[in-house]
Amino acid sequence: MAATSARTLKLLSVLGTGATLTAEELATRLGASVRTVRRDIDTLRELGYDIEAVRGVGGGYRLGRATRLPPVVFDEDQAVAAAVALQTVPAVLSGIRGNAARALTTLRQAMPARSRVHAEAFTVSAARNYWEFPAAPIDAEAVGVIGDAIHRRHVLRADHTGEDGPTTLTLEPHHLVVWAARWYLVAFEPDADRWRAMRVDRLEPRMPTGRTFDRRDVPHGDPVAFVMSTHDRGDTPADWPCRGSALVALPAPVVARFAPGGSTVEHVTDSSCRLTLGAWSWAGLAGLLLTFDADVTDIEPAEVRQALRSLRTRIDEGLGHTG
Image 1 (cartoon, rainbow, N blue to C red):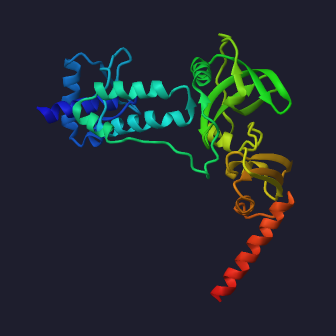
Image 2: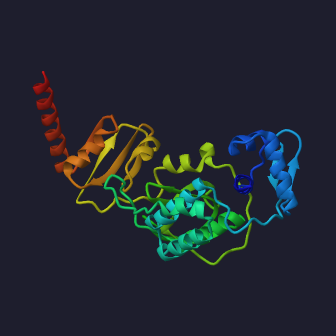
Image 3: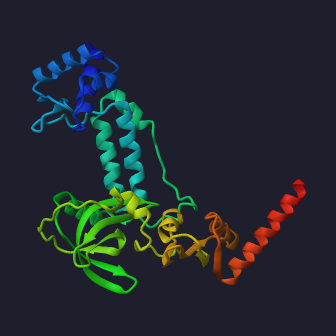
């Protein structure tokens, strides 16, 4: 009976994702037979859950829209995912640490004992790694306002702080992307007839407009790919002890995708761009430039050029010792 109840709860959890799954797919997820799955579906229906049977291509079973799930129905893997997410989110969102801690406590109290054991097994601390070049955690309230506008498909009015100073923009927000510990908004700007990837910490949303817009197809068909390949996404050089720049013989979208966080990329020609970046030492900065495996010229300042010469000398000596 206990195994049957646990399996039925897991079935409810799987259907709670909103997906439409065949009996065969559900059987694979649960490690049970198709016949058992159908019997468990009948059990859930008897308990009052609206499990719909969808016919035709792409058909299967799904949870009815009017169905209300119990407060928490987590399997062990979901319990771990929730615990890790709630403990690490303060690293990318400010003003949320207390709320995240309270949410984790509430979840643990509501979980069945078996799931709670797995959730409590994970105590996670997020620490900065110097290779991550992270930005400061973003304001959770701003993320909430922008996220709501995306969900409702509402036009967003926001003050934007860019290189040319503050401006007020009208945007059609489509996606939020977190990359290299930075939050970006992927939005279409109707007044300029262009797509933009913008740092959320450069935006200050105004009063909601309530005006709706129609969804558009994001360039590259993927908001993440669009952010990674957009060089003018509002990044600024991080405050490192050593900062320099060089002309790199690669297209700006390529360098923008692989440049470390806290660097900037400026389009020069279709086959070259200027990369400005920082590091904790001149040798570290020179090493970052070499990772692009492309010609670098017009290198500034002189300390970077000297670091590259020193690296060449060390490499030559090391190769000489190996014969």
